Length: 588
Ligand code: F6R
Image 1 (cartoon, rainbow, N blue to C red):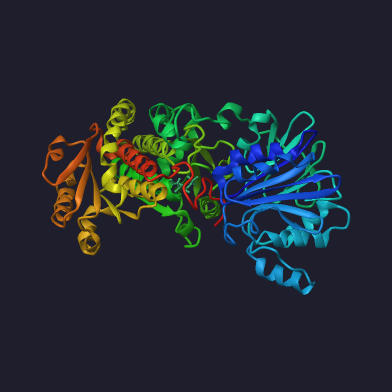
Image 2 (image 1 turned 135 degrees about the vertical axis):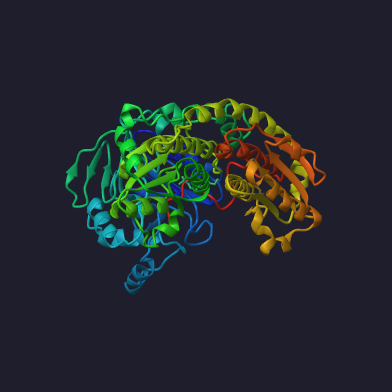
């Protein structure tokens, strides 16, 4: 949430900052701003809306500056709440949440200071200014010692040529190039500059001038290791597609080839041992990643008979979870930076769990705390709505189920997983058929997605995708639950999407189809069973290839993702940047 960028060098800072902010827009796009120092004076431009609203600031003069693109937490999206926040000679950009904002503001007000915004972040500028006695680094250290909550900070001062950065529980990297240095929320903002990149850890500081010096929490200078990254991978383009989301969906067949794991190979010997010993698995995740955990639960419990709890990370972290000897905890996170997932993972570790991280970002905070990292290798995902990373997560978790089955003396199923790779191509072609469904969804008051077992997990994901990028209210429902209350909401204006890929309960889900059809709803079916496509209750259907039933969400989710995408663009939305959302949720 929120993107930060900083620059000190010989170029004009403003265009560099704006370029970096455009790359970070996926982290938030409510408002944006930059501050540049010229001849010892701060010049600040802030605007409500997207980074493009700031382009007039390109002409600002000065070789050092900071910028920010905001995802609002405290205070509405507005120009006065946009960062940088300035107090006296200090300008600050902040990502995170200051939990003791209220007490700190009271303290500042008691000194006669007034606040110009509703944000929690502004108080940081006040505190730094209070502690500033000619040394910006020690003023930032003193101020951060007073903060409770999370922060990634970049700070400018009119009397100093450079930037001070600090981090606690919000990501921040620093880049060192030829005669120029950068700070950013993530590598994508600075990768094109071909710089050496270093990640700050919690409690660390960086002083950016002509070069960069790193410090620990006591301001003792420290050395840091460079992060390895692929500059091309970090600067993706749409490759001719209208939206990143469509491009990322098209990449799924290729991505999945890299997500099949053979855990018995040498590199996973330790992890294989953990699988052998475990009698309980907990999967912790948020949003789409939580749904991939649910898909995995059905497969692991069916194939391995090992109980799997799938926990919403924001719940897990506050519920005093029960972790036993040999509990395997799997944290699933595309970004590896989701604050709730990180906190839940840390809690699980502190209770003695072995922590495996399933993540798409090799240098993320999650990889740094995990006992074992299982990369999804899906390539950078830019669209806010997760697509290819979801498919990659479930295929990776199915591979884990296969290894676990073998570790428990059962039959593995890597062959069936590999067979999915071909079937995905056919299912992808079938996806285009959902374009014909779009007119039925455009003006719907609400939409339901129904399924049982693994189909229920896909339904939840189909529903999340639809509501997130079309803004249509929708719900994923266990088909058998509908009649216990929710059926009251169904009428002739309610499109219902049914997912049927599980033979044992196919007729049972069809019962729910009958029930909604009888109330006038139009039913759209995704199935691998041809015989259901021609039923009179079904308005339209997409036939996907049959596969080992436990793995069907890999295929059934494809038309659901496509449906959300096409309805979104038909409603005039930008599916890559849905309102109120951001790609990387680094606050609680
Ligand atoms: C929905 C979506 C979100 C994320 C969730 C977790 O399309 O993308 O629900 O899945 O915010 O993010 P990660 O996986 O980065 O932890």
